[in-house]
Length: 116
Image 1 (cartoon, helix red, strand yellow):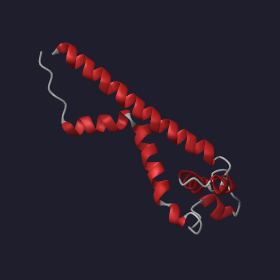
Image 2 (cartoon, helix red, strand yellow):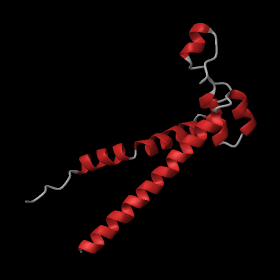
Image 3 (cartoon, helix red, strand yellow):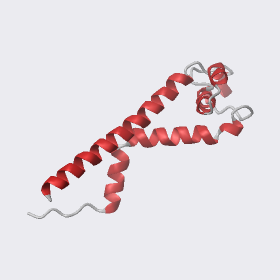
């Protein structure tokens, strides 16, 4: 029985789904890096704070991660004390995704080498 090769679009979709945490971390850290000019003077996007006037536990988290990515630890903790935890989770997802990808590539390379 012959198995049809996977289409390239299917392969890309599978790669994205298998490494979703990695791609999410890349996107979040990239946005934090690019958002930096607006960290100090940007608008408040929290709906909770706009409607009720009270800060939620996530208020300032984006700005905190943004400051951490740029090495401003004191400002990051001032905006939200959970920002080091959020940045750590993003970095762990990023490094875990790289490790999984390298592991999968090395395993596929070994299996194709043994078959050939």
